Image 1: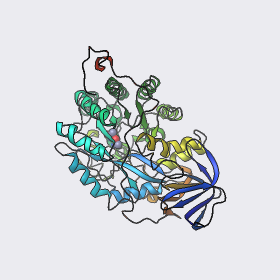
Image 2: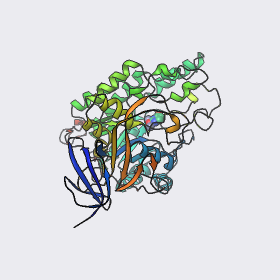
Image 3: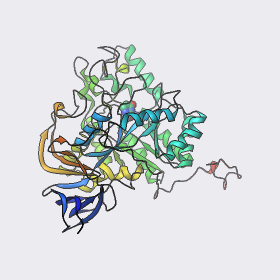
Image 4: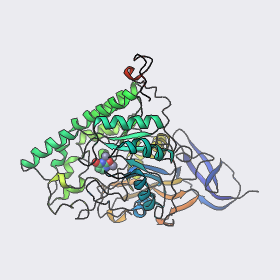
Length: 488
Ligand code: DUC
Ligand code: ZN
Ligand code: ZN
């Protein structure tokens, strides 16, 4: 009689569309049986009274990445992945950032070298494209997609990252041709610069004015433009870190119209607000991120758009910069807000926040929690062949959650390389207690059990937009444009 390597017994198992009582048998890193009364196993975990869920997949985080101004994030692939694992994740997809003049081959080699020896969870990368030369577009991007890097991010703002609309069309055309997903940081650059200059010149350089410098309309204008460009070509995009109701409504309308548009929001827009930045001695800098925190009413609107499915992806946007000269205050002890490093830590708390404040408090179902934790990401970003659900044949990536544990968040309990957390003092109920990756226990009894470098690179599939009909603009469609072929 066959013996499983591991059996998880007596738990309540949930996927994005079903919840059931079953035991799970694991062999060679895969889920091989889901049933009651399984046979013997070398090791048994009793999950009685707990939820047995797919391991989380973090789709937006900045790990061991130099910002465009050359500031390194505080977490490398070891501390970043350990922190993610303690937060119930078994896989993440950080960014591999191209700075201008760099080849994508070089960039990917650098990030493989950073991640491979250190990551304790499985990983892929999204490229950041800041220099779409002909070589990048026609040789390097197709090659990267072939290697399973099937998504990339572009910026509509930031001096050293911004691409113009014409470059955006070039990138979207390549994405369409090869089946990749373009992620878009959508903010109107001119509005941000115009506001920032006036605020600083007027003596309003303190961190809280960062919020005013990124008006809501800057986000909605750019989202609208990005969707117009992508739907012109009928190619999928994902608008990352949406912070406003206006932006969310544009996405909802586009999806209603059948356009291939996905939306992402982040915990900072649901749990934090701009008034918290009004602190003495530069402490507001800890909460500087882009798009910025909004007001309390916005928090409710963002929650509603998560509940109603406008956002399919919920990510931490973990961008850890310490409150010192290595990070937030790299430009000196008292900089004006445009010189403060942008980003918040949150990779470890993304899921505990949603489990506690979403599922336990009855705002979302357990299945919706699973969808946001893992399943939607696995489908949208091409990981569905191996991850994102508890299904026979998939990787045994599992997080066991105890709904009865209640803890107050403290920075000293986090496993990232930060000295603060924006969520300090929140009481959260429900925490992951055991995390299993490809059948190996990596977190147990609040201890790390994984070896440095045990995570593996996961090549991703091309992007599937079934159910999103879309429509190429008539001007590009040879059946409607006097037969002109744009080779799309
Ligand atoms: N965009 C991100 O995605 N993360 C941090 C800062 C930013 O502008
Ligand atoms: Zn961004
Ligand atoms: Zn980000």
